[in-house]
Amino acid sequence: MIKNTGIHNNILELVGETPLVKLRKTTKKLQGSYFAKVEAFNPGHSSKDRIALHIINVAEKKGILKKGATIVETTSGNTGFSLAMISIVKGYKCILAVSDKSSQDKIDLLKIMGAEVHICPANVPADDPRSYYEVAKTIHKKTKNSVYINQYFNELNIEAHYRSTGPEIWQQTQGKITHLVAASGTGGTISGTGKYLKEQNPNIKILGVDAFGSVLKKYHETGKFDKNEIQPYKIEGLGKTLIPSATDFDVIDIYEKVSDKDAAFSAREIVKKEGIFPGYTSGAVLQATKQYAAQNYFNDDSFVVLIFPDHGSRYMNKIYNDSWMKNQGFID
Ligand code: PMP
Image 1 (cartoon, rainbow, N blue to C red):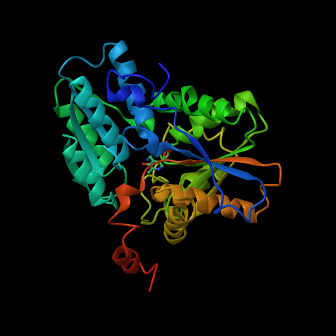
Image 2 (cartoon, rainbow, N blue to C red):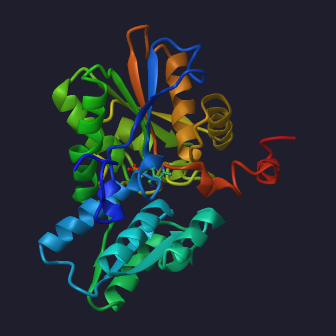
Image 3 (cartoon, rainbow, N blue to C red):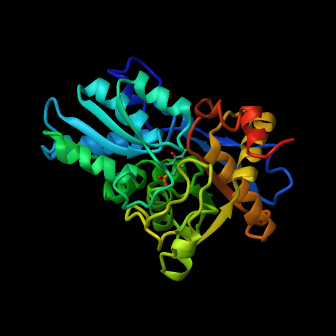
């Protein structure tokens, strides 16, 4: 069915087919043309609707997900929201292990969407029993008829973007895209989208965005997992303290790291200059684009697509709150 025409059987039919919007002012000083893939247009307001729906649909087809089952997942909030939404429509129970770094808005939303939420400390190693990875695994083991979505190590995460985000961008740009700039968390978005785009045109550059405090960039460059890279940071959903197998590092040409402060200001700049209200990582993606531009990655012929993963409403008590910005020392 063509989206937004006629009647939909349920909200899940509206996942995907998000718009590509030309950025007019934030990238004015940069060479080339810039377009944002605004993933907040998904019904769950983020790109995670795509992977959640794909993984659940495949699990149902394979008979792994049975009636009355419980869906368990590790999430910074967005995947949780998508899973909770899908669980309501399809009649599953949803239990989520969420990091305490996630904004209160996101946690409240998960509860409103009917999920059982377990808050776990962000600043412990991934293999610590208190980490949200380990807590989710334990819940899965203890809960009968449960399915662990495991987005960090699930190939279907890449496949969801390979099948939807990639083809959409290729069609929307009529094959003109020269660069993709995307945040890397689980890596599903950048790897799946990048893989599809590179298959259409191997000259397309896939530019990753990582956070200071994450291990991804160093791992990509050296093949080594360096614990010394790990330090606390504020951006949710970007970067990692482990190496997710849902990241296909071969697809990614290069990573750029951004700071919490620069990403926060760039998100606010998107609001003020474009009238788009994006999440924290969208700010990170714009910030990285500026940093790539400063290193002469683009020229007048560049056709650059930036993926904006989610909606600003999830960060009202964070980057869009002046007191929070002051507490971080970002503004006086
Ligand atoms: N931005 C936000 C807000 C996210 O929640 C995530 C997912 N953790 C990402 C970006 C990164 O997407 P991916 O996991 O596909 O790399």
